[in-house]
Image 1 (cartoon, rainbow, N blue to C red):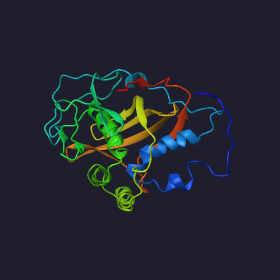
Image 2: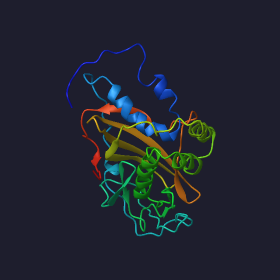
Image 3: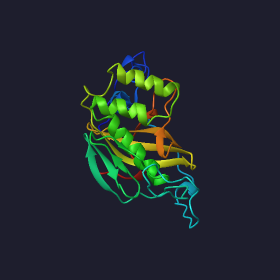
Image 4: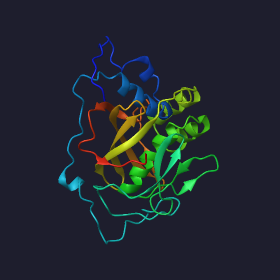
Length: 251
């Protein structure tokens, strides 16, 4: 990435109107790319905190998974509590974004005729696949998919209500041509009910950034936990490189 200096304006890109109005899940994945582009390139870029040793070694167990752990479409669950290596996966495009797909093991176990993807395995890998596919659906530019995503794959609450209002208002991703591809990840924490992931992205301009996403296991699938204002991806910041991330990408 070229090193250039850009003057800082009075308002941060994180508080600019274009960022604040993108509270819905749909617009936010593309706003990540815009924010990264607007960040000063001459400053010190944030780096992810090193993962603990327990986070870098997958925890394997031969014990049976807890009752009720299977996904709503019957994908197998796992007692693993960490994900320290990149999964081997097939990849396919959802819109312009490459996503992992293993329908019989990790998900999506269900793909509707309109392209809506859901049902992921109750495991760290399943949570990662779910986060990636949610990001792709949110940047698809298809209004019906975006509305369905906010309705079906967000944890119910005031944040979900805010995201639905945004999608119904038409502030989606359809008019934005920015392309983002995941380049790596870190599983920050995992329990059978909650997963927190750090995803590293690269925009089509070559800028690198990362953002966190929190997920909850409920109703037999992984759902995204938005903030009260509907923002789903948080702590967006620029990266100088991918040091500290587990490299993983389809493109």
